[in-house]
Length: 60
Image (cartoon, rainbow, N blue to C red; front, side):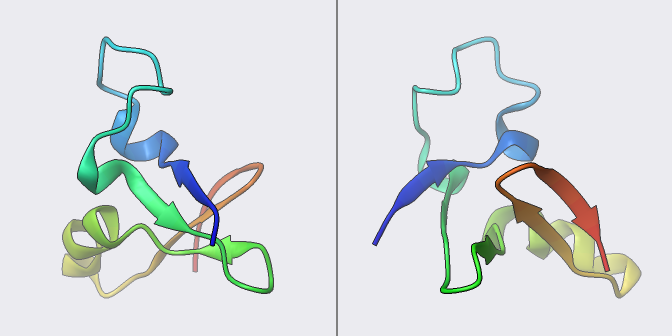
């Protein structure tokens, strides 16, 4: 398992992205795409899913 920082969650933080917070962690799956549970929880209010990729963020 590989853990990384969610750029969306950490976008508003003044600390560097290397300083992890619990909700900033997300897990790559076999397709190298993943969902940040913290972001997705808020984003799903509009019935969309926010997917964080290694190269940025997209909405599907």
